[in-house]
Image (cartoon, rainbow over the protein chains, first blue to last red):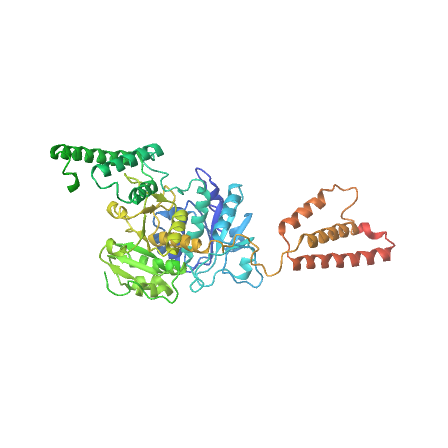
Length: 270
Length: 270
């Protein structure tokens, strides 16, 4: 194990700094770079490399884009034991079938659990195997828990950097839980209109539709129902209500003007 | 738009076949290949390319690995309008800040919704922009909904194939909801031991610990509490309980044998 940077100094330590990504015996240096970028995109910082086959390497640096700092502080180890030393929770990425099954979770539940432990100051390692054949059984048996990405059974081999992206994304989602955008109008620029404003608009609309003889007394009532459903569903904001009412007022002005001129006879032609 | 393959024939159409991934004006053919692989890994099949800068290209084929069939059936279009033609739900991937905010969701909620619509036979498009500057405002305004991957605010630019991987993964998770591995012992090879078996083991353990004089009457009771907590937490399976009880029985046999020989005086030395 290289001596430097086992615990890189951080300006602000967050729970995600307690999570290390461990890559075992990676063949392609480009993948190491892509992993660094995926990690930094998701606020992870601790990269451990067990016997990388070609490292450091220009291809790693190129693929890391602006995440070169993670490569600079990466810890290169001689063994998996060194890379997971001091960790309270070790998670191995695994294909599903093993003769002796190990505790296994999907990425979401596994990373939620990993995040909770990291928040409680546990050191967590998530271990990824070789591009062509993953982790050995012996390596998997050094893990407390296995995680399996539920890929297409007919084509289940993810690129290693993609697998790191998925698990890092789930860690980031666990960090953000509670701050997520589950309400599509949560960050709207204008307040959503209240029921009273909306009702006033719909009454105004109906009145205007009568004014322009679009809504006739003998016509089926379904038209207004359909328009109500449309605007109720859209969840108008206050500014939109003002704009729509402005259009109605303007329309009414012209209709009235036209009707005054024609002595109320020309309305039907509109 | 090329004429062939607008609706590739599928042996079994699933909801995910109603979802198309649309890449607008991609620069690097390698990214197109990596997208195809990420899609196929997550059971997606419909790839649309709007004015790709270099395509077809060897780099795309190489990065696609065994997902070359998705490249072969990809639909190349002259405009975004062609690529989203016939879609009932169009989702644009977006950085957060826009002068006029659009309905915006996080990847999980957005892809759950997309999957539900696809299940109801709606055609859904998820649109990704250029590597360097994403989608234009005009393109984003052709979308019903925007999705934002909540990346590191200090380093938010994901590689486009990584972004496709994250959203495809969420679609796959939506498809699998209910089948996920949220119980880490769900696919165990041996039934988990019942409470009675576990209790019999713990009683047997306590008895054996007295036999070997490890548990003395004057000792604090905390020891058994700790051992109970250990084994309760571990959730032993039936085979493990049998193994552990076998060890105790064997231990007791030797202790009894020793005690008989020494006339019950030598027990303290064990």
